[in-house]
Amino acid sequence: MLRTKLYEEQVRKQEEEIARHRKTLVSTGDRSAKIRTYNWPQGRVTDHRIGLTSYNLDAVINGEIEEFIEALQVAENAEKMLEN
Image (cartoon, rainbow, N blue to C red; front, top):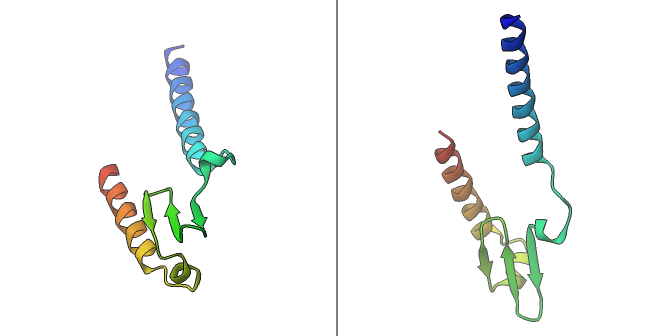
């Protein structure tokens, strides 16, 4: 009886962990889940994941996205360090 309860508790914990992980992978699809905003009248690009705003929209549209790539890499590395 005790073995069964312990087993059920372990299975429940594993299922909760899987559910929590899945929830982080799936987006809600609403406007609050947007990744980036392009504002042509102001010449602005904002990446909402890291809070980076650049007023160089024409360059970004032409492929000069190094600023965003570097900032995303820094944010990802910081997140990984917090996990460990």
